[in-house]
Length: 219
Image (cartoon, rainbow, N blue to C red; front, side):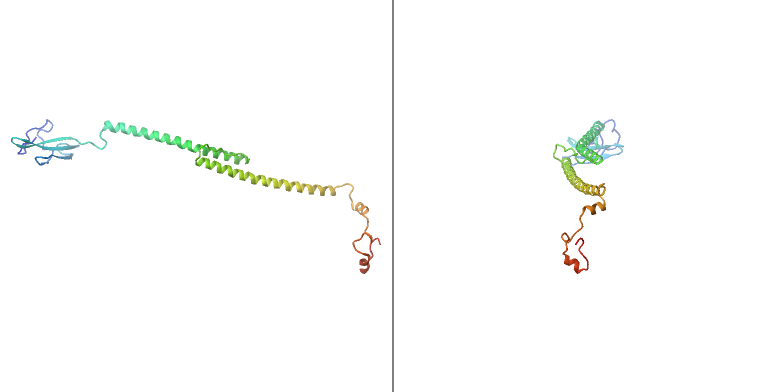
């Protein structure tokens, strides 16, 4: 506390004999505050200083008060529980996100595994599992099943064509082979069995043969 002449007339034990904590001189009807850091009165710390005038019979006196400044982290009593809670919250968020993403991608893994099985076996009759929820994995599964169905139809069509062509070719080869390996077939037997053409059976008239200086065989 300072008298109207500016002389310290009272102080706490730790501030007795020290210089004033601030140079503020507010108006008699007002007060002023400031923050002082690392001063001779308060070394290595910050203080909020209040200069408050009050009226006495001998004039206006000034009372200076100081309180510690509140840091941004408030204090160790708050920052430690707050930091611990943030760490636990982040861990819970990471675990929840991992579980949600895993459940979301599980149908995709099932679709990929089934496609790999179909590729290894070559059996296009199989289909990939379709999820029950209408989302992107369900659209992917339905598209994959339509693709497999079209591929199966194309393969079945090619197999039917190859089967029909093979059957037709086997029939022709069987007939040709039967004629060529028949034990009763020979050129002589064919000539003996087939009558020579005569004038009656030839496709040309007798005048056609005479005009060319030859005779109709058998005429």
